[in-house]
Image (cartoon, rainbow, N blue to C red; front, top):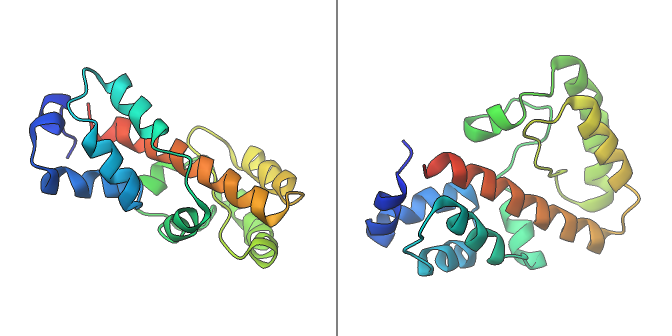
Length: 156
């Protein structure tokens, strides 16, 4: 259930922490966003969420584990975020995901909201040209984008 901004600002940290953790499972990020309260408006909250990045490699690796593969059955927020990936695109993603994971050692992570399967598949294929360090940094930036989107859904 979404919080309004006043409730987000006034609630005890232990009540807000699970909401933020659902947006991005990075304790340092959660603490940074909590420490910035109260926020005058939602845009300030989202800006603080972005400013709490970038994510170091270790945080990115841990946070990636909370995300499903693109094209596989998703739950919660991931289901609506990946709604542009239909069953035909999901089949293509199985092979592409396997190749990506062999190369980088983690799932392909992208802010998929509002993007179609063909666009996401092209992005995955383009990112295969990255070296592992660059790709992990890209995934970290995508995690922040996903967190901002989820934060806008969680706090109104």
